[in-house]
Length: 149
Image (cartoon, rainbow, N blue to C red; front, side, top):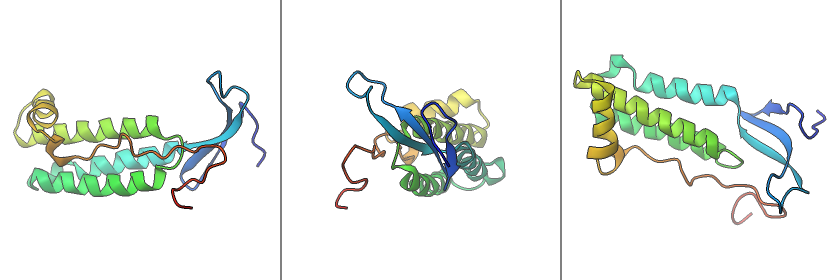
């Protein structure tokens, strides 16, 4: 595959790879390979979170549902944390929070606003839901991807 600046890029191993130019004054002269979760990988994450927070599980305690969502998100974010994935992580983070809020609301036979209030404001730690912000390891020129390698 021949990658060129401004080209489409390719999907490989769940990542979308694209050759891009830096967008800051200090990096405008640099071109590098950017990678982030592919559209299919992001859709799979949304589907899995939706499956875990499905209405059929309303009798399962909320703590268990949050624990299942956390288990999935830890694995998914651990795989995709290397690269330029912050925007995609933010979307999945908000989606998981919204699905948990909807789950709580349905469980209490209330509206979505009630669920958001319980998860985001009344609970000191968002009912234990992990936060994916800050888990990205961005690539840096001439440095190893992982610490210690």
